Structure formats: C-alpha cells, structure tokens
Length: 276
Image 1 (cartoon, rainbow, N blue to C red):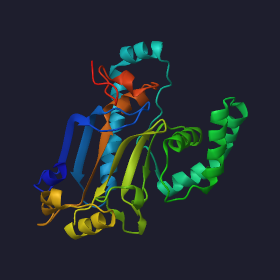
Image 2: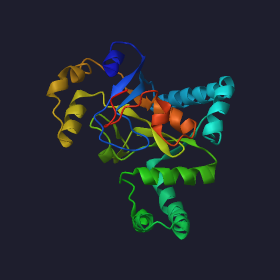
Image 3: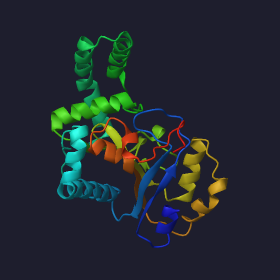
Image 4: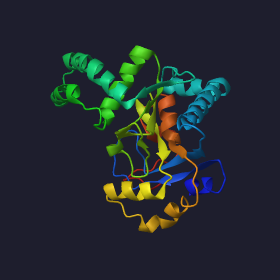
C-alpha cells in the first residue's frame, strides 16, 4: 500500500506500526511481534538517493540518543555495560561482492583464533565446519547469521565502524519484486543495513513495470492474482522508487549492546510467549 500511495503522487511515505510474524525462530534477535518503521520514496536519478535518506535518518537517531538521553544510557550501561556505537556520515558502504571477499580473506584467521581457545567439543566441531566452508563462500551465496557477525567483527577491526550498509545483494536471495541490477542480472538493487554485525534494515529498489513484475514472479513461482490491484497501480505510469523496513527493537538492542531483543520490549512475544 505504501508503494501504491507513491503512484498517487505522495513522494515519500512512512509507517510506524506493529508487525506480526509467524516466525518459528528461537533466537536472541527475533520476536513474533515488533515495531516496524517502514518507508518508501520515489527517486530522480538513482536508488542510492533512498540509501542516503536512510543513512541520514539513522545518524539523526544515533546523534539524538547520544545527545538527549545521556542519563538513560548511563542507567542501561550500569546493568549491561556496552561500548559506544561507532558510526559516521556518510556511513561505510560495501557491495555484496566486496563484503564476501573480505569475509573469505579475513574470516579464516579469526575462526582459527577462536578454535585455539575453544573447549566445548560441539563448538569446536562447528568452528571447523565453518573454517572449511568459508574460503568457498561464493559471491552469489546467501550469508548466514554467524558469518554476518564475523563480517561485522572484520569491518570493526579494519574500518573502526559498527554501522554500515551492504549493497547489491544476489538476486536469488531477494523477493520477486526486487529490481535486478541492470549491469549484472545475478545481483540486484537491494541492500541491508547493519549495526554491530547484525541486520536492522532490509530494502531495495522495487520493480515498477508490470511486465517485469510478472516475469520475476513467474521465475520464483509466485501467483500475482491475489495482489492484482498492486500490479495495476503501476500500469498508468509509475515512478521509480525504493524503500526499506527497520525493526525498532533490534536497533535498540544493538545500539545498547544488549544480549537479547526481549530486553527491549516490555511484553516480548515469541512462539512460546503470548502473555503477559
């Protein structure tokens, strides 16, 4: 609906609302209900205009927290000590290919160092498994949570930054409505934003041409009939546009260096907790 609103001459649209996900995921960073901060906007020349707005927004949030909430941050730090977030504007940006090259070259020494001090047999086995697989990680292969965190450590060591953007994700790992990279069909005009090695925002340029939408949906086995009004909204001239979704609680967790996202919600919801 936000994309459809753009086609009605609303150049920028945002939404703050609860998001409900049937997510059978028991991790430190997932909940089945969270607060979503979504935005979509048209652009004139390049989808990086949208990335610039997201970059500015995050920097304004981080600056505001550090400037206006010193007492609250100090109170959290007493119970959960954390290092100040390192960020800059414009933030560090890497392509997916660059990030994977960094992971392949700098990741193995870090895993080897962890292996030398690890004592748990299960963790030792997992580290060895990752050590064997990491040098073979392809440029179009999806990245898992463990390697995301490892990449975050590498970027922190090399660039001294905890906030960064990875651009040009492989087309195969993104939804059907993602715009392919016109220079390389294996990649896409899509991006993720990371804080301390964990993703807080996922976004992309959206396909705004109906025929291309049908072609991409067909390739991924998606039936567009139930959302025909969405496709129809692009039929009479459509603006190129892009956007993204931010998970508020995850941003709070990572900004504060908290160990679990449930600490950011008064009444956290997961697959086994509905009340209180």
